[in-house]
Image 1: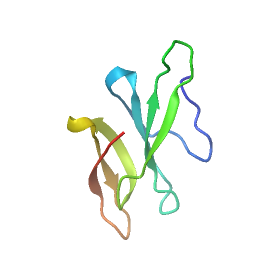
Image 2: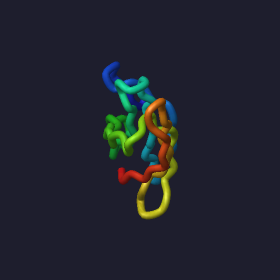
Image 3: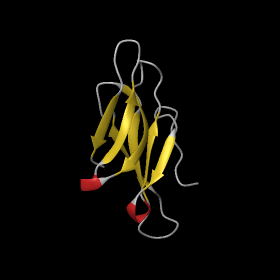
Image 4: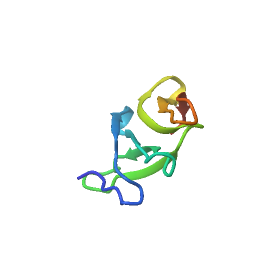
Length: 95
């Protein structure tokens, strides 16, 4: 197992492997109460060590980020779902 999410953080919805084996992913939130977030898992420097989790936050005015794609300038690009009172969006976030 690489990483175990706590119940408070929820689980991963989509994952993408970036440079140097870094895993990027998203957590799909629950309606308006938990907007979801983008996260990063960095592999250990030595084999058998622990992976490092970093919550990159919710990148926009909408909620529920879908999968992310590493792009130019080190940004992660993705989309956000809309809801009853807001629209979706395209975002770029630095890891």
